[in-house]
Length: 415
Ligand SMILES: Cc1ncc(COP(=O)(O)O)c(C=O)c1O
Image 1: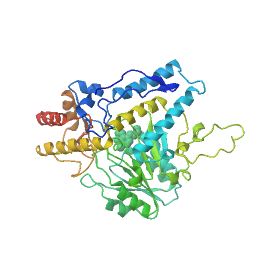
Image 2: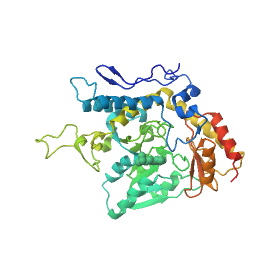
Image 3: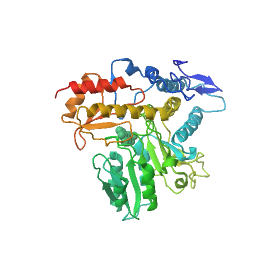
Image 4: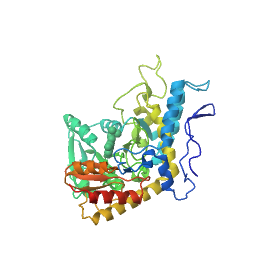
C-alpha cells in the first residue's frame, strides 16, 4: 500500500488534525517493513543521489513536510479554532499529545519530558541545575560532543574539575570511567553514540558506576534516538537530551529532554519564564509561584509549535516503520560496509563489534575525498577531528546498493 492520503490538514473533532499523511507501506502490524517502498517518501532519493549522511542531517519525509505545512496553514489562516479554545490553546494541546509520544518513544513518563529547542539546551539544564560545590568534578570522554566541554569549562570558575577519559582505538571502556569517578563526581557526561565514529556507550554500566558514587548520568542522545532503541528506564539514565532532525527525520528548532522523575522537584531550572509554571501567573501569585513537579518547569517560553506539529508526524512515521526494524536494518548496512571496506584495507576509526548506525574510517586528504564523492552524488561527512576520516551513516532509507555505490566510488577515487 503506497501513501493513502496526501495533502494539507483536515479538521477532526473540531480542531486541526495534522496527522493525515500515512507512511508508505505501514508496518505497525509487525510485518517486516518494505524499505524500498519507504524510499518514495524521501524526494532526494528519487534522484541518483546516494545519501549516507544522516549523522549530519536526516532526510525529511513528505509526511513531516506536510505537518509543517499544516501548521503554517493554520497559523496563516488563524484557524480553524474551536470556539472554546484559543490558537495557543490548540498548539499547547498538541504539545501534550506529542509529549506522550516522546515519552513512550524513550520508555519514560510524560511528566519526565520537557521540550527544548536543541540538544545543548537540555545539556545546560541538566548540568547547570546541579548544586555544584567547590572541589566537585564531572567526568567526560573525548568522543563527547563539544557542548558539554563548553559548559564544564564555564563551571571551572565555580571550582568544578573536568576529568577527561581518553579514547583508545576509538573506544572508551567503563573501566576508564570507573578509574576517574569518585565521591566528588556529580556528573558523568557521555554522547550515547559518538558523532565522531559512532562509538556506542553501554549506558547501563555507566549508570551503575556513577550511581555507586552518588552522581548523575547525563546523556546526549542526538546520534542514537531514532537510529537504535533507547529505553531510559532500562538504561537507568538520569538526563537524556536529543533532537529530531537527524535520526528521527524530523524538524529543526525543537528538541526534548528526559529528566528522571525523582530528580525533577529538586533540580532547579537554569532559566525561568511564563511557561515554567502550570498556571499563568496572576497578580495574586506573582510573588510566589511554585514550579510544578513536572519536566514542564524546564520549558520557560513559547515553543516552536511548527516543530511540535512536525515532530508529531516524525514520531508517527518512525513508529510505523518500527525502531527495532530500523536498528536491525541499519546495523546490517554498517556491517556490510565494514566488510566491503575491509577488502580495501582501510583503517577503521570505529571499533569492531560496535552497534550503531555510524562507521568512520581514517583517510588522508579527507576534504578532497569528500568533495570527489560529492561530485559523484554521494553524501558522507569528511572531517579532520584528531585525524582525517570519513563518516558514513546509513539509515532505514538506505539500501545495500547504496553501500555498494559508495564503496565503488571510493575505490575509484585517486587523490
Ligand atoms: C552528538 C551530537 N550532539 C548534539 C548535536 C547538535 O547539538 P544541538 O542540538 O545543541 O545543536 C550534534 C550535531 O551534530 C551531535 O552530533
